[in-house]
Image 1 (cartoon, rainbow, N blue to C red):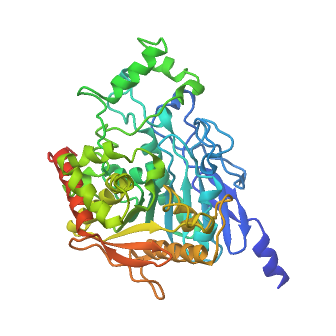
Image 2: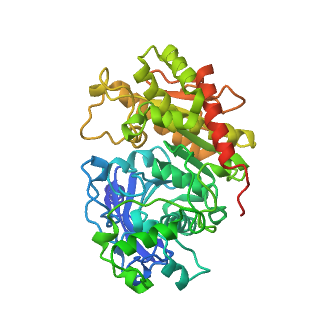
Image 3: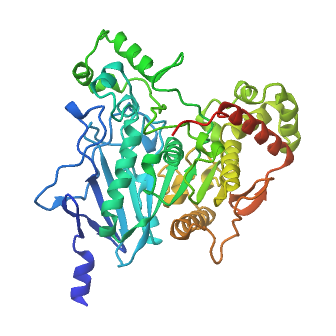
Length: 491
């Protein structure tokens, strides 16, 4: 018995393709933090595709999170990322201590492609791993370090992988999982990618790029609408190379060389924001475009959003009219009748649905139409100290329930605990089999023919269908998407 106890408390080790690592053990879960999956993208490797990490001879300490990728400072808890450095391509692994062969969940954090890190407490994988999964959280390059094109970089390597370096990082992390996750009792042939907000956009982009084919087998998209239309790397009135040169021109580098670009101080690089664009190799189409063209990865999908996405901003009449045009007034009146709210408040609900909820459900419809399994959700749980005052679950608010990492600024009661247990079990079952359903849980029907069925997750979790006015608004959003993406993109 003494020998058994000593074995449980000993530091766990694993041998991956670059060397041995030593982690920590907590109860029935082992954790390995700050594991490099690519070489530091510094100096001549800034704005280059990720390169293999350098092997090491000694046992590498994997008990502390690696550096976060450089980013502006923010006050929110999820953005308190600790030390920052361009040397930031690290991932973290949590695994059940018991031997076995477990499904793998790879999580891509949100933050508008500009903020966040894999090591913040919100994304601690301990509880999910204890449910029977290997959990991996990933850092990827942010802002202009992650998404940047410039004629000088193109001239340096015109046939190379250009621009969408954060997406290349995500693919490199999945390649690392393919090579190494069996050393952590993970099944490399049963990988689920999960992303929230910007991470959800990355999940949708990964579902549309040939470079990620075979690297994952299921996907979950949280609060990523799939309605964004990406600019090209070059050509057209607005493109990524033009925007990149405009920025460097403002810095006084009108005829910059690639070496001069890489010498720009990182403090200058992270000012402003940057987003994915279509480069033709890594990102070949906009996030939702593949779904409307039937070219998405044919894997089981969970997709959904939250009941108060308006916390992200921009959910107003102008946004709704931009989608609906002359149908806005009639549908807004329908929302007044549906919700019983004032016209102003109903407009926010309509805009919120058009921005997040309905486009996500439309992608679920398209995925099912192509013969793939799709499960849609609407998350509507408010922590006990916000109940009765908050209108719903804020953008990103579902993650503390998924990871069972109650935010320090929130209180939970038995209802919150129950929702967290339910959600964690759904997601782990989905990662295991492609079907989230199991004994003792409310039935989650797969998406079929409209009206769209989804699971309302909250105090009373239940399957629901969209009402007629919401289906009309969804149809309008789908019409706009189809018009945007009528011409199939070249592979």
